[in-house]
Image (cartoon, rainbow, N blue to C red; front, side):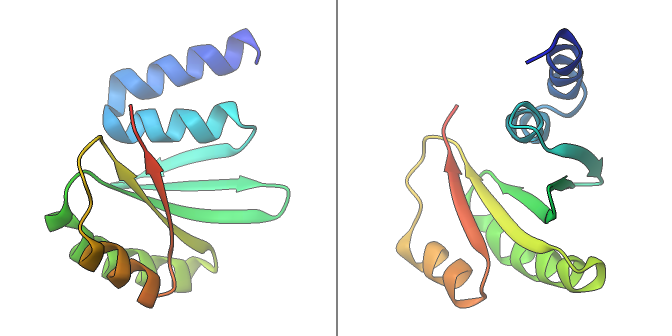
Length: 108
């Protein structure tokens, strides 16, 4: 990690909050990160990702449809990050799996 990456990560957290925290994880892992609206566009060595962040179960339905649409348009792999320490319902995780989207858990 360089001082530049740490500075950029602090700026992302200040400006975008939870979305910035998720983007910071990818930035410090070596990805180039760009935030557009409520989605994160990330790329590293040919791996192009569209990342959406869900804080609770209610947001996941809309996020699935939005991410699939954007990922087809931009030809990127969709990822949903389930953020927070709360328990995620099995119906929510099954809906993400059935739509062919990769999901990851991030606990602060």
